[in-house]
Structure formats: structure tokens, C-alpha cells
Amino acid sequence: MKCPFCAYSESKVIDSRPAEEGATIRRRRECLACQKRFTTYEIIERMPLVVIKRDGSRQSFDRVKLINGMVRACEKRPVTLAQLEAIADEIEQELQSHLEREVSTVEIGEMVMSRIREVDEVAYVRFASVYRSFKDINTFMEELTKLLSDK
Image (cartoon, rainbow, N blue to C red; front, side):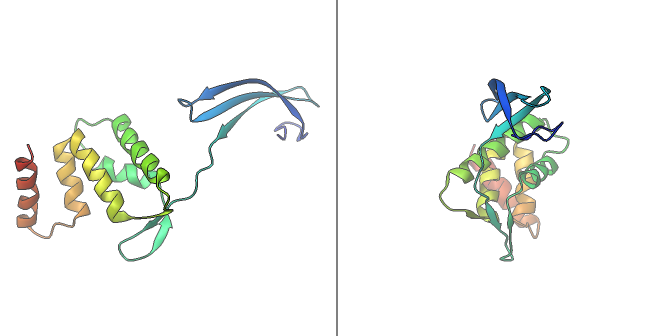
């Protein structure tokens, strides 16, 4: 590990401990040349996920976009950012556990809707109206009827 102070390439590990609920390892190091201490974090390298959009284009999975979409649906609703981040974590973990490296926006949208429905029904309807591109009040009412009949 290269020292951030003197760029010497040798250091010794003084302390290691799990961080971020075991998702990373925090290492406290000391440079063997200048004796200054610094911290490094070791994380699991994940295989990149590619999202296939409705128009057929592909782009890398962006957790921030996922959370932003849910935040918009939950605006002025009693849903915390921590709840949305937990949903995003669940979805990302599930996608990473699949063997396939490509996933469609349809699949991601369905995963979001099933989880957000459990948290807040109004947010669910908002998300579904954008995701499913409700064209008129009838499609909106059909979704509300399904929601009510599932209770």
C-alpha cells in the first residue's frame, strides 16, 4: 500500500476491524519510511451490472438513480431515507446474487414496486403510475382496484 504522505510502497497494518456492518474492512496502517499513520478500506469488488433500458440501450446499474426514483415517489410521505436505502440494498444484493450480469429496467421496476408497496401504498401508486406509464384515469383506477382487492 502506497503511503499518501511520502509515496513509499511499504507499510505495516496496525489494526484491522470490520466497518459498515461487515461490508468493508478498515485497516489502520503505518508507513515504514516516514512512520505516519493512515487508514485504508477494503471492499468486495462486485461484478458490474448492466441495465437494459426499454429502448434497448444499456448502461451500468446506478444505485443513486434507484434511490432517487423512490424518493420522488415517497415525497411528502412518512417514509425515511433509511427505509429507501434498505430497499435499494436488498434489490442490489438480489441482483448481484443472480448469475446474469444484465438486468432489464422492467425487472428492477417490479422489484421496487413489490418492496415499496409494503412500506407505503401511496408511494407505490405514485411509483407505479410513472413506471407503468398510466395513460389515463382508467388504468390508474385499475391499479387502485387491484391494490384494494389485495387487502
